[in-house]
Image (tube, rainbow, N blue to C red):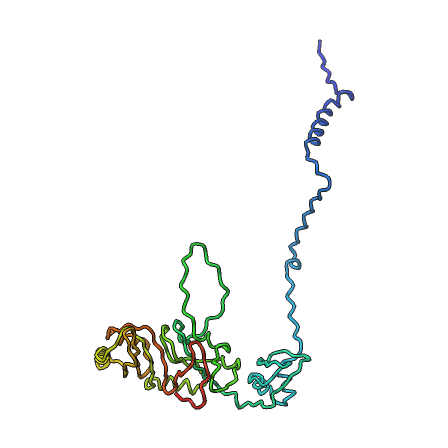
Amino acid sequence: MTRTTLKLKPTSKEAPKAAPKTTAVAATRATSAPTRPAGTLKPKPKPARPTSSPVSRSRAAPKPLPDTGERLSKKVMQIKGCSRKEAEQYIEGGWVQVNGVVIEEPQHRVARETITLDPNASLMELTPVTLLLNKPAGHTDGLEDLPPPRAGTPSRPGARARKAPPANARALLIPAHHWADDPTDTRVLKRHFNHLEADVELETGATGLVVFTQDWRTTRKLTEDMATMEHEFLVEVKGEVGPDSLKPIGYALKDERLDLPQAKVSVNSTTPQSSRLRFAIKGSHPGLIAFLCEKAGLQILAMKRIRLGRVALSDLPVGQWRYLAGWEKF
């Protein structure tokens, strides 16, 4: 007898048995989900990610600033009836005023401002100038140009501080340091501080006369005739200096093995505390005075150059400058 086994399918009454379990889990999740307090803001939707098209990545070029008005040189050309070069020279010469203020830049823009040209304007005064500076101690002699301005960078923690370089004497050539008693009565212009050359050295620790010039003739004089041009210094040394104290300096100057330049030294004044010596040396020889004083066992306290050729420092205060007068010659 063969046994037949029947497989029974669940009836519709038995199928929903699993439903209560699923409903319980969903209810549990709904109960455990945090509820948002009333009045809170809904989170902002995330912005859409930009597409990779080249149009969206490109940046709009900055618009150039509009130029208002015309160049001042063009206005002066119309007023004076001159060439553009002459108009620029009138402006750079300080002869042009805009609304009562002297403007020295030919590219300055003007629209409806009042432009005035000095009736005494002349292009004959556009000659190169020479500036004489009484250099303070601790400044270089200005033979090198001023470094370009750079933005300061903060020092790193623990980094060793670097010693700042000495100040450049060129930084003193500004209108604020012009000597009020300048005997030349020359008008100070911005162009006077351009293209200045310095050719005569002076120790950083010394004070005294240094020369800056725009005149090629003065530059040639200070370079070609330097070997025969006399430099005069006042040197303050420690202690009292007698007649015999300068003999070692005389012996050194006569020593052919040292091959030193021509120089004269004398005592200008002396006290038990300090003495003042006068040196007259042919040519520029930085370090020579210190060498000669060391030979004599003298300690230098201060040094100042008071004359260069036939041009004297006179009463020019330390840190100030004046113009070389037309009657002064090196």
